[in-house]
Length: 71
Image (cartoon, rainbow, N blue to C red; front, side):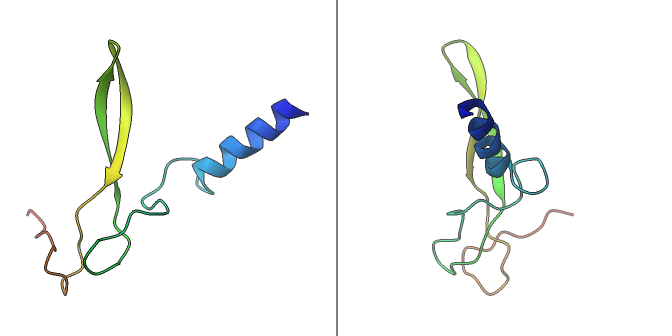
């Protein structure tokens, strides 16, 4: 029974789409409080690369922290 609960918790963590999505709880712009994308970067830990998740740039045009899109 514990094994099934672990799988259910893991599925819930991945979200409805089955992958880590564009928004996680807590990833918001500190200035405008709008949700931002999640950025995944590799980080080396004990000789192995593991994903490091962080908040991405803000794309709200009314925010002073807004990042211009590159053409």
